[in-house]
Length: 513
Ligand code: AMP
Image 1 (tube, rainbow, N blue to C red):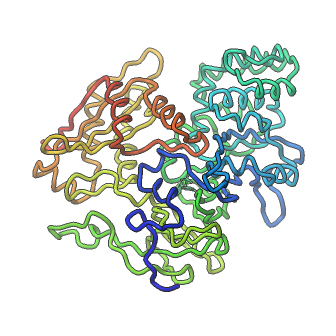
Image 2 (tube, rainbow, N blue to C red):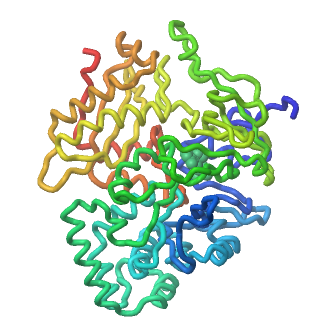
Image 3 (cartoon, rainbow, N blue to C red):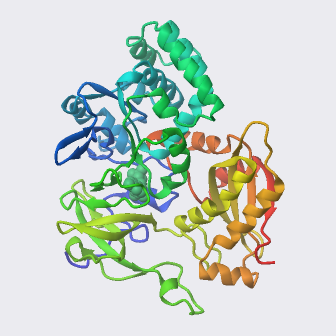
């Protein structure tokens, strides 16, 4: 392919304005528009296979607790159906065929998946999942975020769910959609003994802070399947807490724009998983990236981004090199820059096996500093470990580069859950703040902090439920729960208003004196 300019946020392709525009903005703000018959998120069709055959599910006719959600589809001016990738897939014939072929059936009827109200759908997913609990072979969601969200919601819903199982009823206050009610009630009949069994397990689980909820309540579940890498990595700890020792199987690598690669080693833990590119899914090109800061650590001037070389075809990528992926798809995207940074970890029969590194966009930058989502993730992970001292855990986080005053500084927002009766001690949070500031290892940041051209990092503690409000904001703007990703950095005034309105405490770092 000649060196036609690549389509990118800076250089948008005329063929795909809506998708391009979406990438220019905060990536999780908008639902993913596509008119493709997308092959995306075939997660639930996934089964563990070895050379000897199926490992699990071991039986035909089992069920899948599939925590999935569609959003509304609509018609473009040209008459094409548009909506999120997952919405297309769950509405497709392929979704039904997959269930028939694998003889594994999702617990919830389509009416539950497609209603477009994630709270009502969540209640029904859990109710039906528990009603069929002995038949469930595995638990899945598109991204790990929604799975953690569902099991956290369950901690407050279980009594009502048990009541409904006992009576064969459906809570009028939780589920109001007539269509969803009809479809769910068709499956239910009173089951007092099951309700009693689940209730007593839940009481015990409550005492154990809901550790091992999934294997306890779904005793025949063999694994958890979801996207757990990249921006989902911060939810892994909580997922592990709910999953006990069940294998956490990383779902494949794909996007609304095109499916990319598959996980050939289901037993690989999320930390080491690679995705083998399937060369025929799209035409793939790879822009070699050199982290300019690493290349020239003593330079005074540091580029605000990676240095790029000419794009290479799939056959020419090199082991250990990082690239930005470029897609030319069957559905009309031409040399579309996906914005993901990947690294070639190995090859399988000549096809590169990629590790997902991060989204390419720098998210925190004030002057010569440059920090990616991964840098933020590492700093937050390191500092939040101190929370164990007061039996607290990080629920979610985001950030903002505040340049409204000189010098500018990083603001990191944390929502924290504290165990009953405990308090978060200010001393611990002050220490977390210091540790987080010191954990940003980027050379530009360290120099700027030392010379005070970037001010002390600020940690803002937000009220319980703040990140739930942010989720609500996106969902009400058309995002889908299935593909939701908490924005890790924001300049969005609405979001900043929500965050600042809910801030209860501030801490300033003392890391640089
Ligand atoms: P969406 O924009 O909702 O279509 O989601 C696609 C994006 O999710 C990709 O561009 C990646 O940034 C991310 N993603 C998808 N699959 C994975 C994966 N297996 N590991 C890490 N990130 C992923």
